[in-house]
Amino acid sequence: MTVPSSIQKFVGTWCEKDQCVEYSVSVQDGVVVVTGLDTSDGEVLRIQDVSFDGSALRFTSVCPSTVFVLTHVFRSLSDGEVEHEFTRIEYWQRKRTP
Image: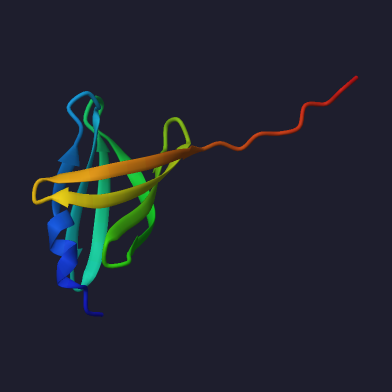
């Protein structure tokens, strides 16, 4: 599998100054790999559904201790900055009425 050279602008570790989670992006054997870490307690996030369309990097993270599921989109703004869009996914049940 050939990974587009445009993925290189996403390679590295990304964080936001007021958050305790960081995401690292690398290319290993032609595959884009994303890892996630909660730096406050060392919990490793489960990452799945990684895809790259040439301009946006997308993936899903699951925090094992809270079962929070987030979908993420990284878009490059400059050499050292990305826009990080994320959506929290929750599963709700219909409330039973008496």
